[in-house]
Image 1 (cartoon, helix red, strand yellow):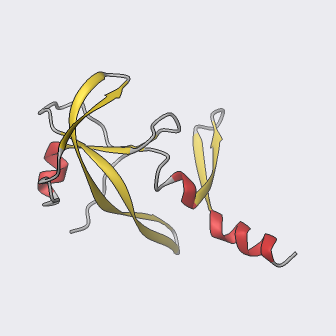
Image 2 (cartoon, rainbow, N blue to C red; image 1 turned 90 degrees about the horizontal axis):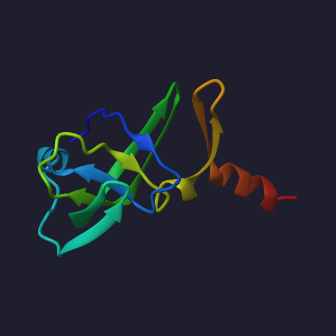
Image 3 (cartoon, rainbow, N blue to C red; image 1 turned 90 degrees about the vertical axis):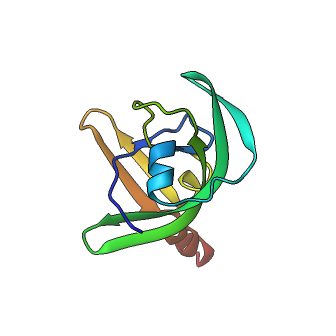
Length: 117
């Protein structure tokens, strides 16, 4: 199943996070070991799993699997957070705070360019 969601790109987050309701809607495997995670909101119970992320703009589109932690508390205010592990290592990310824009450049483009120099 593929759905569009708004996500926060968080360079301070080690791993990506999704709320339990979204995980259930996507029918993700939540049979893993319950763990405790710490973040800006304090301690929460989570289960680790994986999702496929699709990044699309114009004619470009990429998809890849990333690890996520599913927040098990039934809270309405848990955002979808894209953390460093599995996402940031796929792109060079430019944050332009003045214009409130983010630009993603595929990392493998740079790897190919530099390997031929």
